[in-house]
Image 1 (cartoon, one colour):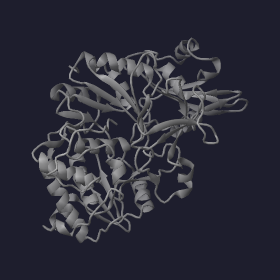
Image 2 (cartoon, one colour):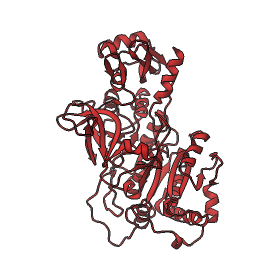
Image 3 (cartoon, helix red, strand yellow):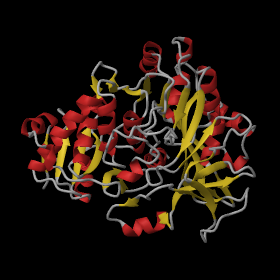
Image 4 (cartoon, one colour):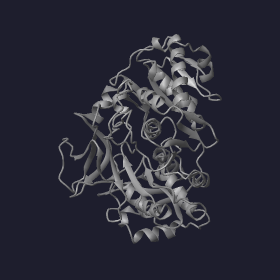
Length: 507
């Protein structure tokens, strides 16, 4: 999200490990040592100088523990420990090792699976985080700091081609897969010593993304490369988030669609001054048109941008400034290239629906220790996104659905995204997730789980009547139930597998 190249000249006096994550940190620590890079909403702050000093010290401690080039080191942290996570991440890469960020909200068995899968040599866990036992050692940041030496010369030389991180996918449709990214991939589009930097319209950008997500890793790179420092909301609620915007005069805000919907239904614009926001970026999933429209009204001075990428495809992405004339469009390629292809992998003509692919502008990512799954996703420089969509005559990408979510009902194919977008126009619907359910005659029928809007009576029959004016008969949900909130993964996406099981059990 919002990674752009800069054409500004570099300062020749600064020498950095070219193309590495910690090279970005070293450059900023030399040119802007006292500038605050990361702040949490509870008042903790991390300057570039402190970040670099602490990361270097921990890197020497990791070297003393026997960590070598290419070793995997788990990082188990929560939103409250974002500064500590950032320090440990760069320490791992300085030591030549591979960072494996994991949110502390993951259950212990899931954490164990990730560490087992990548054969982690060690686990650095935040104070209070319960790291599972295994063949790896486990340590806290303060313990490693006590073991640090004053000899950073012992650290290995790291290049842009070395692995920087493993990010495990959300696992909404199966076991998480480890996506490996080299330093050159993670830092693509950055300029360590540029004079003019992205996000220059304010001193802070705001997010509340977990460390184990691709969106979270983008925020880490933003903190290293952007003019604005990162402001982390350690616990997301609409009022708390909007209050931070007002108090800190935040200029850039990054959310997922679920957060955006919560902000709108809480009517935060009626209670807080949001006029400072110039950029509001949404990522992780397609932004429903009704939500995008609401954001343009709630944030009157903001450009609302929908970013489309994946953990596998980054830094390739499309970006779309919301346009009421193209409410479902996700834009053109902002970095890399986009293609819609048929079953044979060849590009389709405008208007024809098929598999969406993105191509990275730099080094491609890969699945770690899963060549068979990788062969189905990474194809001759292209990444198959698992989405069905089409390109219009002007080259704008439109999504129809996740390939795994398309509902085949009788002779029809139903797009869950289109049904969800229509349902969200109903004033009593705050959130909705649509799934396919087994049907003895049609094969599949349409089911919906609705989170009612606060203080608004919800009637399933009324929603069905509302949808008859917007959808075909075969698209209208035959089964509707309500929940207080949708189950979501760390990236904010609804866990549709769990919702199918829930609706099936209710039936």
